[in-house]
Length: 126
Image 1 (cartoon, rainbow, N blue to C red):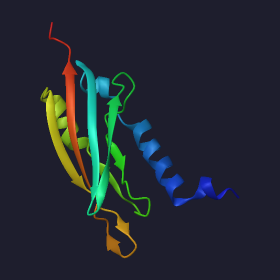
Image 2 (cartoon, helix red, strand yellow):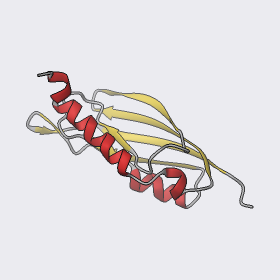
Image 3 (tube, rainbow, N blue to C red):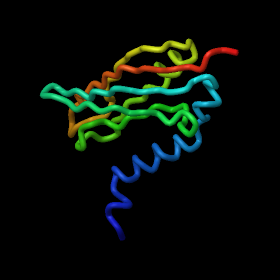
């Protein structure tokens, strides 16, 4: 039995991948979207990490899930889908948001908060 394939982290990754595969495609939901870049900062009380996610619009799901940055967090993820899709459907070029992790670290709630800044580009309407 391979522990890595059956670990809780591997199972959460597989579930997130399944949800992404089943989601509608971004280019179908926002046909004139050309590019999308998310600057993501995952913060805790003692610091955080920052990274950039460049979305491949032609292939991406219309689902924006970011796992919690704390490896000890159980069942934690950030679902940015509602905020991001609302902004994209309104053709916003610059927008931001945040999401608190709803997972747990041991017996306590996770303290991570994800902040993001987004830049979107759209094709000119014909």
